[in-house]
Image 1 (cartoon, rainbow, N blue to C red):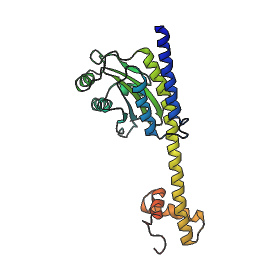
Image 2: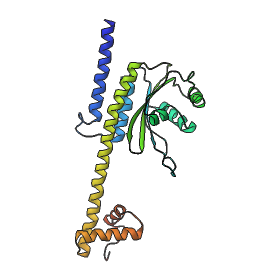
Image 3: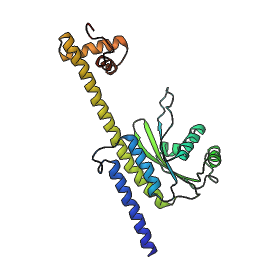
Image 4: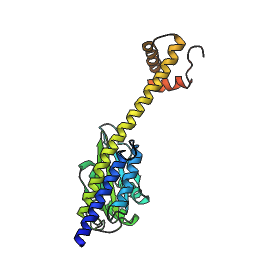
Length: 248
């Protein structure tokens, strides 16, 4: 009976993860979530659904490009102060499990922060400044230059077993797909808004100077080069009448 109960519990967790997946994919809501909403949903689900997880967070970094400074290390989502402080310590020491999970594309587990021999200075800081005693970091997704990790924390040493790790990987996989879709949706909406803004500016120029769409766009391009601003920014100024049009 105990085995059957355990199996039922495991199946229930996977069932609830599937429900979270439908939520972040937009199946239940009828629309794609914003990236920030996906991250929040996943972090909260990790604490609610996965055994032993007391805190959860999502870390984002960008690839280092030769000749460029790496962009800011970001604690993109956290269920409380603990994951944020953990990320701050990683940033301060320039090392930690989240970095390894992101760059090596593998799951990193810390069974006990006291006995783990990796990153000794960082582990000492974690022990002294947080209640975290075990950690599970899973690469969340790869999207161009931006990488991420789903980080799970337990206040107890040995807080995560193999089953929890498998469930966490399952959750992270759904999150990666949903986040990629959310990013594409965000970019698409931004592109549509940009096109509409430029269209409005062209319409104003066409009416004012009695020219066709091609000539109006060329006017925008020429003026944007003279002012050293993007066509989109110039279009915004024209629509808001921050740039005089004709005799205005």
